[in-house]
Length: 232
Image 1 (cartoon, rainbow, N blue to C red):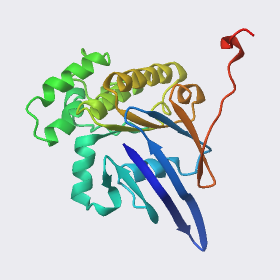
Image 2 (image 1 turned 120 degrees about the vertical axis):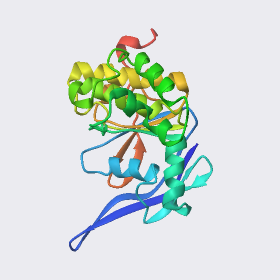
Image 3 (image 1 turned 180 degrees about the vertical axis):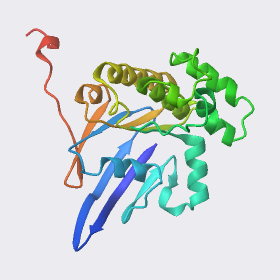
Image 4 (image 1 turned 90 degrees about the vertical axis):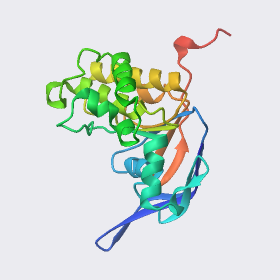
């Protein structure tokens, strides 16, 4: 589904060069859930932007569903994102002048789908917002806004969902509920999920947890919880 080949990315700040990624190799299978953890400022969001084709690598390649993203032009990348990717942002990124229903339906509306509002309505009902369809983002709580954002990301049944700290702006209780909802909907639709999060409890619900540090990705191994250990 997704393959990174010797992917490198760096920024220049004054006379200094900051290496975000150093020759990273990674494969993500269809339906797999992968969490990316690591300290702030290590490039986790940059990695998601590269996966979405919103940034270009310095070298190496990102291959998604058979397409090498660096070979596509801006319009081709936009079409690929519209048809096959869903993105969930930490700060929601809803259109303030559109209702919850209109925001959730937006990807399908752009694609010219006649069933856009019907599908959006069904998904908003599934995420518990069936009674809030006509409310604007400013009339919704943070948790409700993130539910709309998740519905928008999944309404077109994407092959890949990219989520950047989707619980980061929420209180612990709301964040846990949103995390559970995202994982449930992801499993139900069998999409691949790449999740950036500081919440290790959330991260450990994924199939793999990778830590980004010093431009390198390494798989994190967790000790077995003694409360769930098998008797000798």
